[in-house]
Length: 250
Image (cartoon, rainbow, N blue to C red; front, side, top):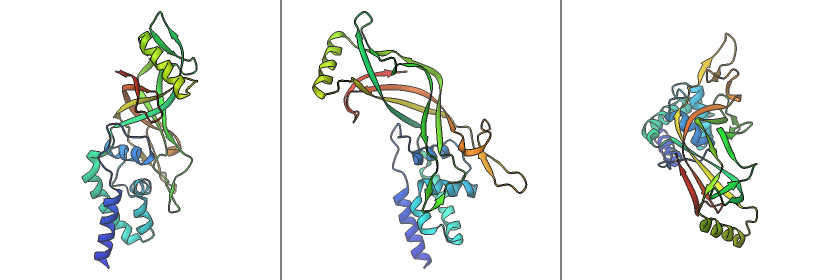
């Protein structure tokens, strides 16, 4: 029975362990949770946080073992070992995707301007992920954050895309041929994580433990802050983000 338990567990750990991360990971809850671990923002020796982490990143393990206290305590040790092996592949960069709209071409400035509603002006933060609740196999995530915000070290302003007239004209024609009459551009902000302030535990006598960054006052219902720097912005003409129009390097 013990051998079967170990074989099942090893199989599940192999299944749930992350592949080598892309340079910029999508802001999914499991990627953000792994980033918290990579930057030491959660204490994986804390069983309550580790259990929540498993509910987010390794739900199959929870389904198999969480209702057996003794098995689950063994699983915790193996999750910690798995983290130690894989932490080097956990995200250090996050990509934030959005849609913006081009306005009229500025012939004086040689700039395909963004519309007033789309103009990126002194932007300093992005909501990476938020949800009202998260459960795994009916077990709720109680202490780990489920709301994340990235804050730039320097605000960014982008009035439009600097394109020569011939390039702007060619882009206009491609928009027309593709039926993109609103001139939507698919935009990716590539963010590098610089620091994540750790979650700290507070617990008054007789009260349930709460976890928060020191700048927060009421626990994980507030946004978990990632301090980031903007490394580049890429503008694409297709939703699959394969046809690059222009890229800003910071």
